[in-house]
Length: 189
Image (cartoon, rainbow, N blue to C red; front, side, top):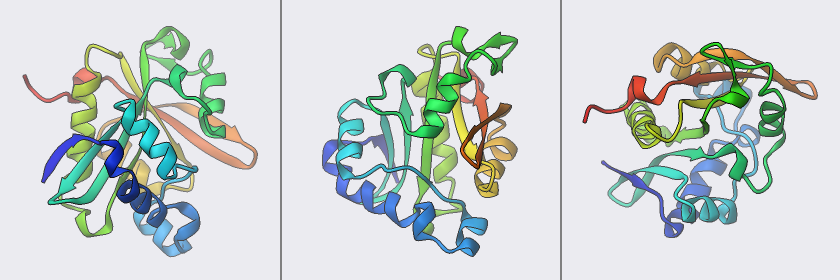
């Protein structure tokens, strides 16, 4: 398995992985068991993010086994509603005693792993790479997890040790905001 930054040429395969794991493409049973991604990351959006160096990729001999986005929150051209809600809550969400607005942070996610590669450490390795890439650039990696996405909570909070900061709502949907210090999980140098 090779872990690297995604390139624009990876966009079709990344879009297929994203679409296969999208909330609307899965049954309620699949969502409850494996989690899901949301939003509208299509091939064009993923190509743009890859061009900006915002995507980490797990490449299993040419197959996209997983991907993870790591973005500057102020650099998103058209943030989706949950990100807008997160940005609007920066004065009330606190990281290590300070309002999030006063912290250098990067938006972590989405993270998605192909079904055939789950349970093999792909998510953990992408998380560790993201922490290493953010170390020195940010004091926190901040993610949001839809309340209905218990598998994502188990991976990020229970597994990776991300800290809950609070909740934001978009209409009827509630999102848990979680964060981690990159240096906490960065690979040893």
